[in-house]
Length: 533
Image (cartoon, one colour):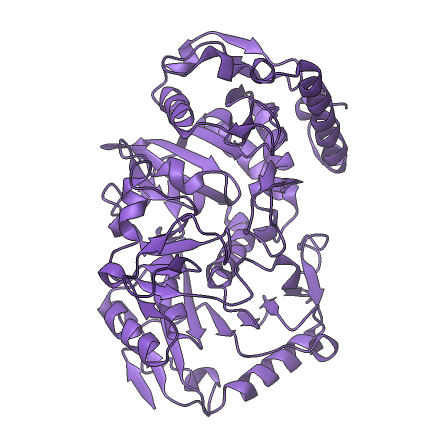
C-alpha cells in the first residue's frame, strides 16, 4: 500500500523492494509529525517542535562506516580512513535488511543534495522512523510538488535503526553499520537512531563524486555580504568549532551551515537546513538559532526538558553534550533563498585549540592555508562522537576526515587550485582556549571572535599591522578595535609563561609529526613552511 506523492514509475516496488507494509511517500511536515506522534517516536514541544531521544547513540559512529571495495573504487578510496566491506558482505547485508523490513511501514523522502541544479544529486531516503523523514526534509533540499512526479533517484539510502548487523556475516565491525556501495548506488544504515548519520552519508557521497567534476566539496559554513554574493566567506571546521554560530551573522546573508561545493560558478550549499548544537545556547548570544527551538517542525534531539511545560534545558548535558536542533534554512531570517554564492573572498579555518596556544586569529599565506587545511587541527568537543566526554586534540585532515572518501591530497590540491585561480584571503581562527589549556584557561570570548571576523570580512583587518608568530610563522594582528591587545598574544594571557612555552613546543611537535604523512605529496612551497620539516 502506498500513500503520498511519488513518480508512479519509480516506487520502491520498481526498485525491487517489495513485501513492505504501508509506504508513505514525501509526506509534508505536519503529517510526518502526526505519524511520529502516533508511533510514540517523540513528543510535541513548544511551538510545534518535535522532541526526540536517540537512545545510546547520540553522535556519529565513524568506526562503523564502511565502503564496499569494488573494482571501480579500489584505487580511489582512502582506505586508511574508510573501512572496507566485501561485496559478499554487502549483498548479505542488503538481503537481510530487506527481509527485516518485510511487513513494516516505511517513509520515503525524494530530495536533492545540492542547491546548484547543474551539480545536485537526486537522493531517495527510506526511513523506518517518521521523524527521520522530518529530519532529512530539513537537511536536504526539497523538490517542488510537480518535480516529484518525475523524480528518479541517483542513489538510495535505507535506514533501519531496529536492524542489527552481524559482523561475521556482513563483514562489518559491530551491530551498527553504515555501508556505501558505489556500484549499487545504495547506502545502508542500521543499528543507530542518531539522525546525523542520514545527512552525513549523503555528504560523504558528494565528497567522493564532486572532485571528478573539478568541484571542491567543503565541510564548511558560508555566508555573503548583503546584496553582494560575490563577497562570499567560507568557514571550515569540525563540529563544535563554531561553523553554525559564526556563519549565522545577522549582518550577512547565510548560504548554509555545514556542507558546500565550490564549482567554476561559485559556492553552493548542499543542504536545505541547519543542524545546530544547542548546548548552552542562549537567546542573547544567538537569537536566531535559539528562536528555531520553538518553531513548528524543528527537530529537538537529545535535550532535557520539563515534562509538563516542555521548557528546554540548554545547560543540562546529562543525555549528551551533542544536543542538537534541526530546522529548515528559511527559519533563519537572513538565509539566502537560493543558497548560492560567489567564489570565496575570505576562507576561514576554524580550530578549537584545547592547548590554549593558538591566537584568536592569524593570516595565512596560500602555502600555510594548504598546510593547515591538510593538518585540520582541532579538538573534538564533548559528545560529537561516541565516547568523547571532554575536548580531545585531533588532526582531522581537510577539517572533515570522517566524511572524506578520497585521499586528502585530492581535496588539498583542489583547494589550492581554486585559491590560485580566484584569489582569497585565508585566516586561521581559534575558538578554543585562552589563558591556559582546557581545565585551567577559558573559552575564547565569542564577542571577540565576532569582532575579529567582522574586521577580516570587511577588509579592515588586512590593512592593520601584524607580527610574525614565533611558533607557527603565520601573521597575527597586533591591535584590533574592541579586542584586548592581550588576547592577541596568547603567551601574555598565561600566568605561567614557561607552561605556555612547553605547551607551544608540544603542539608544534604534534603538527610536525602529523604532517610527515603528506610530505611526499606536496609542492616545495608548502614543504618549506611545514613545521619541523
